Image (cartoon, rainbow, N blue to C red; front, side, top):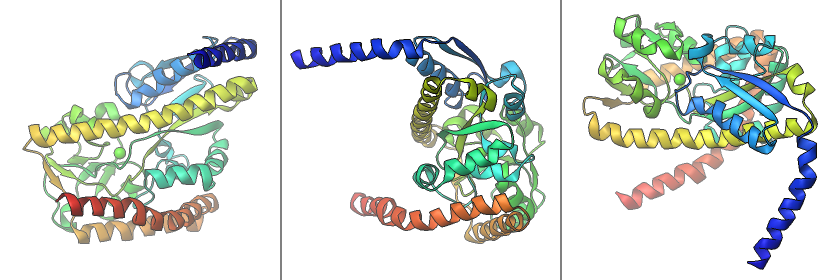
Length: 357
Ligand code: CA
């Protein structure tokens, strides 16, 4: 006990030394999220960050967050943070595809890296530096904000048995994957999260992808579109914190460190929360919703998706130097990472299956 008491005394002494540095200035920030205030786990990006930053600064750095139900601009976060109406935002980088297609890579790309590979790219493969470079033009700093893990391929009213079934289908699917599906004859649209159920009910769309079982099941999509396809298009969707450049630069180095540390901590926790949410919902879904048909896309459809993905990416890379730079960085890192993923994760899962059949 003496040992722990001594450590506690040391910590208390350290905190007394550290406290004046962090207490030097009151900072009040506003934060806007793409998600509704109760759209957990994504909406936790607000309260978790506010709690951590507040706790680390003795309440002197205060972040008040708002969901899309309050600010009514789910897909306007980048503009609002850039413009300074909010100092910080939480969203997903691929929502800015219309402004700058290169931003999509900082969420995910079809048939690209998984969560571990992509985080390794961010921290050790040059990803963070490329992210700042791309977002610098848009007046914000950008940071990883938690990962959804592999997303499901979406909910369809009818089974997709071949490529013909995709032709003329009206589907909500954002990012580069939307362009891939458009190439395959799908009529593609992006609809803010809050309007998805209504669009499906009214027949504005025939199919949609959202996230994974955890978030999907609460939206009730299965009642209308029971064919639930495994994923291909968002293998590791990273969420995004954006910070107004001037607001960040005006912070003391201590507060910048607090903010960066807290965002990183939220990102890890968010990734775990998404995994947990999906795993529990998957178990429940299989038991309680027998009408849901879990499907995989047929191989010819997957092959066509891969071919279209390569064409879409190569097309942008040919005309956009920055897109090409990020595309090649990701490709090079994936080629380093994937053989290790196969012999470690994939091999382990196969070994586990072999002995637990
Ligand atoms: Ca999605």
